Amino acid sequence: MRILNGENVMETIIRENDNVLLYLTKKRTYLVTVKPDKTLHTHRGYIKLDELIGKKYGETIKSHLNTDFIILKPTIRDYILKFTRKTQIIYPKDIALMIFYSGIGPGSRVVEAGTGTGALTSALAHYIRPTGKVYSYEIREDFLLNAKKNLEKAGLINYVELKLKDITEGIDEENVDAVFLDLATPWLVVPHARKALAEWGTFVSFSPTIEQIVKTVKALRENDFIAIECMECLMRRIMVSPSGTRPESRMIGHTGYIIFARKTLREKA
Image (cartoon, rainbow, N blue to C red; front, side):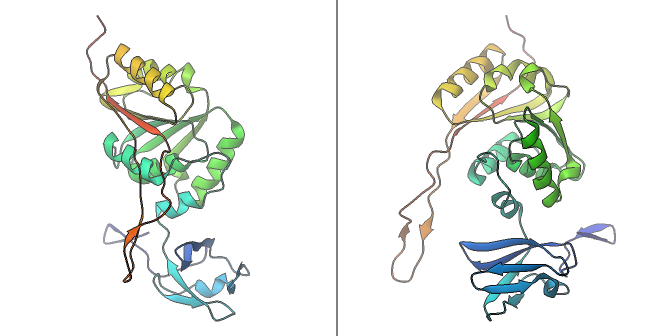
């Protein structure tokens, strides 16, 4: 990104240290950082990464075996799917729904727990930048260190404050726009979330089991949250071909349940 006449303009010329997605097929892509004297080795030949410098996104580069790779600018989805993982990540289909329903955007202040691999953290940071902030809680230091590396790779670390703390013991921040949870006992955080959220704040929680959402919804009702919704997002890809179009044989089925709720200033009777 560069500044031109006071506006952010997407850079089209690839420079040293830029991140690039090399596309071979739908199932074979490579996220690389352009460095001199570095080489990407693939089953279709190798590519010297310094040969990418000066090229434009959308152009093609050939491997030493004369195989074409298309040069693409990585999206936030590309970064997340290529992250080094120490934990299972929330799928993009669920992340997208969580962010859309939360109402956050540029400038929002958001609390998140647990950080894990940093997939949801990165998506949140992508949408609240350039003036917002994500405060991400995690109880395992090794997870935080890995998430930090992933956030740095995606160029989002400046919009995140990583916190080695158990969020079930309390939330430091006040008047935040949303609280996002991906942890085993989200119901224990509900009272803390109510205190931390601004009057317009949104509560969002992701859980894989029915038992978790039953306890979380009960806690939300007890703490006077309103507009409580619980849903599951299923995604099925479609194979499109001149010879016949049909759903793929496999689909991403159950990944988890998402709970949404809104804070109210009404106090418990």
